[in-house]
Amino acid sequence: MIDWDREQITCPRGKVSVTWRAGRDEVGSPRIQAVFSRTDCGACGVRKLCTSAKEKRRSVYFHPRPEYEALNAARARMHDPAWKKRYYVRAGIEGTLSQGVRALGMRRARYLGLDKTGLQQACSAAAMNALRAVRWRAMAESG
Ligand code: SF4
Image (tube, rainbow, N blue to C red; front, side, top):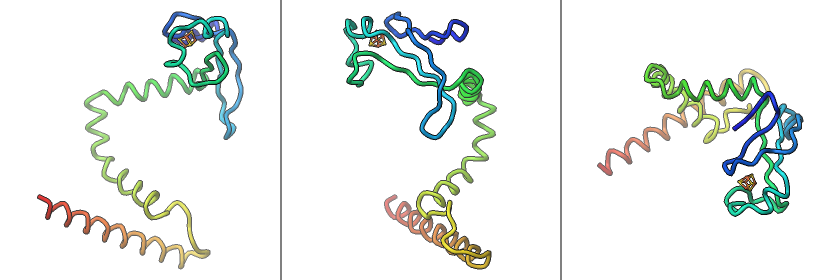
């Protein structure tokens, strides 16, 4: 549990963090680090379940309050049937984009110039159609 006003977090064992530091992650995004005390974590019977850190205490990293609350609100909205209905429409294109990016490397252009880039996109789209046709055929044959 996070107490934003006191800048402390409480772990499942009821222990309260001893430090709270605003910083940045590896890619420069703001984040907060809260650390529990060596005394509390060192004597804790569930420490092995709580952290794999070699140091005998738990560190927790999380987003600053506005991002943290926005993320939680977005996650809560995902349980709303109306949200699920709206997302159902979007899910198809999300799958297509994911396949294009992950399987066919469409995040980056392989060539310079609009003509070649356009050709790459057309070839990737054709490859995606072929992959889907093969998969559909395999699924139809397996019953
Ligand atoms: S290891 Fe530390 S943070 Fe984890 S449950 Fe125990 S006292 Fe709490």
